Image (cartoon, rainbow, N blue to C red; front, side, top):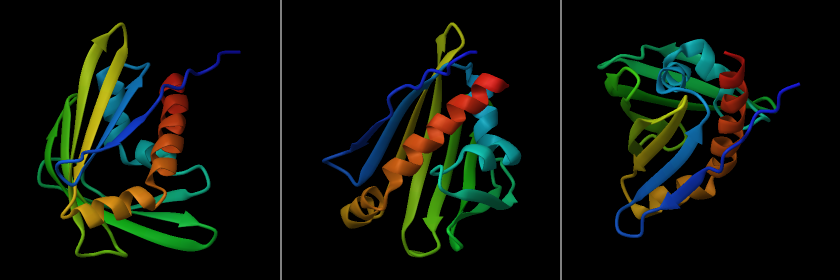
Amino acid sequence: MTTTQHHETQIVADPEVPLIRIIREFDAPPEKVFRAHTDRDLVAQWTGPSSTQTRIDEWDCRTGGSWRYVSVHEGQEYGFHGSFHEVRPDELIVQTFTFDGMPDGVALEKLVLEDLGNGRTRLTATSLCDSFADRDAMLSSGMDVGVNEGYEKLDELLSRS
């Protein structure tokens, strides 16, 4: 029986600008981590907390495409949507992110994948929010649980593929 190693996820609020930075390493090459972030079926398997199910309503992961998914928790639905501004295989995704419950709050997100060699990847994701209040609301919403549990599920998914 193999045990999947879970790496620490760093979630940092920038004190100068309303930005959240997430840094995480994975025991998989960039192409596998990229595919897990761009393949509709794979995204649905790992996104969000373990207590939720993710339903992908729209997924056109290409430069100029758009996306929408819904997290379902105890019968409640929480929708999220955005646009893909730049998608570069195995290295970069730039997108917008909006929670349906706060339609005026749009974050600009950038996900960069760095090849560490030996089949390992460092993911650095940034979310630039409209204001410090929006950033702090995102941080206090339980985002850390969704990110940490989601990446643990992603570790498991990457170890099987």
